[in-house]
Figure 1 (cartoon, rainbow, N blue to C red):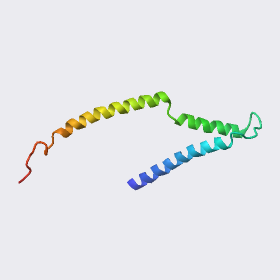
Figure 2: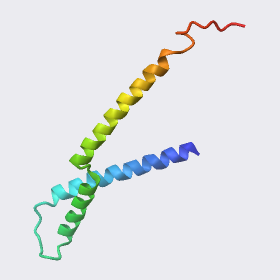
Figure 3: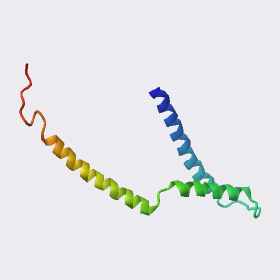
Figure 4: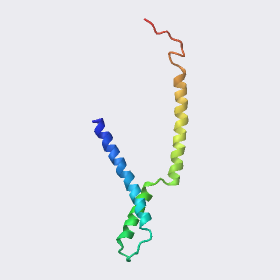
Length: 98
């Protein structure tokens, strides 16, 4: 069951990565096409690709907040781990024999 979940996750990751790469490539290659007017299918597709890329990239304020939260978590967890590791059977010199 775990193997199936890993394969599905890998397939979804590949699909998402291909979506990003193909969106960027389409925008780059079709940036200077001969536009046919208001109902240009290429312009609409380029707009959709740009929306996909814009909606999936993190905004600067979100990135700053995320970095601050991660930094705080690292500090708190680091302190907790140092205190938890300071007392164990080896540091207390407990002899484990029967």
